[in-house]
Image (cartoon, rainbow, N blue to C red; front, side, top):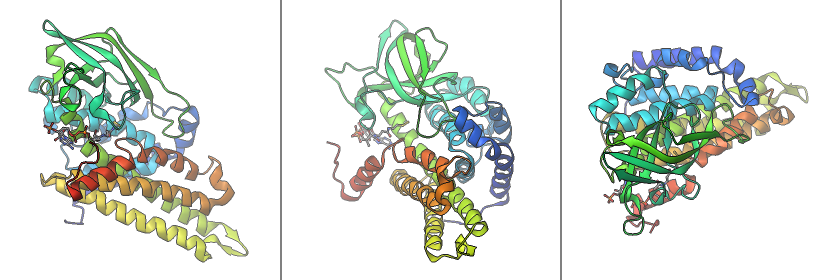
Length: 387
Ligand code: COS
């Protein structure tokens, strides 16, 4: 694995950091308090290329490699995980599903809008009764002439109330005769389709700046051309896309660890106690040292995934390892950053507590830490603990 960035990758990372230092970091506390980022930042982010990092140039994207993508996600995670989530879901979970499985017409319809930030996409997999057990989702899509009619409910959907289009996973098989993952299909549903309703979920612990929604689909009629991939291919689409999504989450977590490290060093070298800077105390150095090691280790796991993806190699287990380690490291680092800050870490004037609140969901969504461990365990042993 080549550990050096080329000029383009370096330039993108510098551009992203300079932009986010100027346009996001000074505002993130207020956005967090308001429970909404200023949406005016999204077109500016699109101009830099965040929404089309890996979308090919023919669809208006940057056509960048995956290492560039994870560099962008790290910078977003360092600045504000709410922004990272918005991009990861629209460009990542939605865009990559369409890019990987769409027809030329579907790609032409949606990718230019996503890459330019004119439209956001969302990813409707989780339901009230199926989170980890995604293969048993219960939303239904029934064939009716040339159309499909979709009914069901989705939960915890990032971008749900802002999205122009939703990728909705619904069962096309009869749950009595064919339950499980093979009966799931995927549909591209414009959110202004009659019968589609999104309600925002308020009061989240973290990621307060991004919209998270509950989706209600009641006799939502879409043409057969809305089917993404083939009937019954939906679960495979979801899992393939989530493999990459997990790398994206992990990269965002590297940004959280890095942010905690930088903020902790700045605070520990400027605040004095007992007549010397906090940084002069060995127990404070231990906290900072742990963050530094976690940042390096998590970044290496993420870059390995990017390298495998860029070379077209299998990367699913590597993604689970990166996601597991980086998300747990992000919680650890943010918790330790609060310890370095002491009482100041407990108020939102300083970023440590926001890092912790944002980090906490990273061990839950896109596959919990427990799911990642079972996937890694299955890969190592050949024994499937899910059955
Ligand atoms: N890539 C491609 N295909 C995959 C895949 C992957 N990563 N993982 C599974 N599949 C395929 C399998 O090959 C299998 O295909 P066949 O039927 O052709 O053999 C099919 O999908 C079913 O796979 P499996 O038997 O592993 O499904 P399970 O129901 O046991 O589910 C887990 C496995 C639990 C790992 C899966 O449901 C999962 O990842 N859950 C977490 C979901 C999640 O992350 N939710 C959060 C969403 S937040 S957006």
